[in-house]
Length: 258
Ligand code: NAP
Image 1 (cartoon, rainbow, N blue to C red):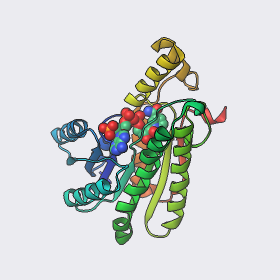
Image 2 (cartoon, rainbow, N blue to C red):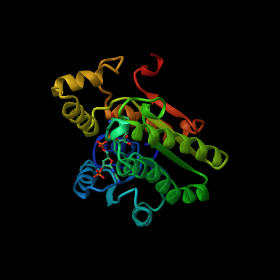
Image 3 (tube, rainbow, N blue to C red):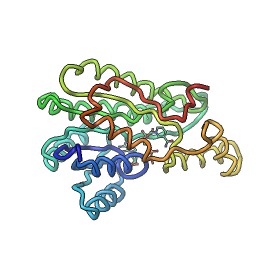
Image 4 (cartoon, protein in one colour):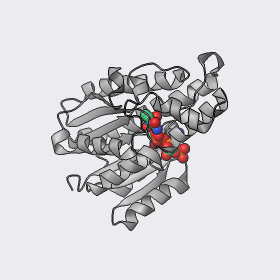
């Protein structure tokens, strides 16, 4: 229970990786606010955690909306007292060859994946600096570390999210706040299910073939479990994680070595 007394906000906490991180942080003692656009999903996550004896609330918010983030941040502070941990996990991952990528889709990806990370960080950072303790964890991707075809908007957004992570980490390095990115390969979540659907539709293959295409990028020939990401997030929040900042930590089964 090393995070007892800490308040944590997890964006995109309604399903997938964000949901797993919310549970792992709660099990470590933190009080939780999960946020996303789908109120029913975040309410369900918070209710499940409360049913297991943890402190958890849901606050609806679109992280790409500056005003909405401010309202969410005020509400989260009201519920938690202090927000000491921020997990910028909300994200989308549409795919398209660059020649068919519209400006609208490009802007949508950047506004959620990058601008959302900036807006939430700005909303919570001052409180962390005032208390000289904070943990910001940005869920980026291996797509932030290297290029991959058909996801140029996503790759650009995740490279930017990692650049932002490194810059803010440097800015606050001597003020008790660490800022890191976690960079997963394919994780077993609704986002990956949607990737299977997209490959099936666009390449005209079966769902099984689409999944095999995804697993071909995996040295261990499996999807990563959301809990594997959550375990690293908890490690970064613990006292003995305080020396780690400005890092982009790959959880990719060694994929980067190939
Ligand atoms: P997911 O299952 O699709 O969940 C995404 C979460 O983000 C949902 O709760 C979604 O809720 C929320 N979200 C999306 N747009 C939002 C917005 N504008 N404002 C607030 N919340 C928003 O995805 P996931 O697989 O758990 O992915 C989580 C993060 O990990 C993403 O940043 C993703 O890029 C990254 N990642 C995923 C994988 C993977 O293979 N799954 C690999 C590497 C990195 P609403 O739609 O209701 O808002």
